[in-house]
Image (cartoon, rainbow, N blue to C red):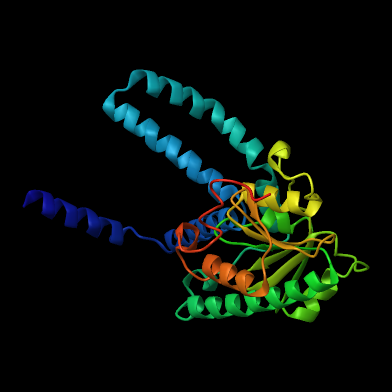
Length: 294
């Protein structure tokens, strides 16, 4: 009973000593934390943060369980790892500082705003975006127009977007085909689809480092598609300029010879379902972890 009384007394003291400046302090910290989370969601820094959190959890467990060798090893890793974090996160930190310099700090309304129909609207945009991409790929396949289209998923690709031109348009067959027309200025790069929207074009993707495992007849577009899928959970669609063949890269594996129907079914299964990466019912997800189709 005494502990409960002491708790309420401490709580009362907090409210009695609470100042208006404390409210401003809390709001500022909230904005900083929100923008830090947003930065990690927008780039691949979020994936790196998961690894850091795992290391910290193992270090805490080693301390509690008195695993002396593991504790000592992880202590050195954490000490020297702090320097590595600034090197690894250098592009993200620079981007954040540039945005702060331009005054692009999000308002509190974006933190506390409602999101009741957001997921339904996102799913509908994805359906329209998938349909537009499928129809455009079918058209470009007939004309043997090379194309590279990246569907962003859990891993945000802000650093990839920065290499191209932000478009932010509703996807349609004419727009997609015009972007990849061989005389267009953005046709050599990749197109980024974010939440069903045509977000950016002319983006540069990392090439795969597994040169010996990639079929010799696959060109730069296919190698870039595989490289992008190795570095993120994105779904990458490729239209070959030489053969008109449609392919999909996922998890470092590429599968080929898609028709209009199979492409639409595969993209719908991978992008519209929340558990699509673990879905065993689709053709592609049953293969992407085991081998490359050659």
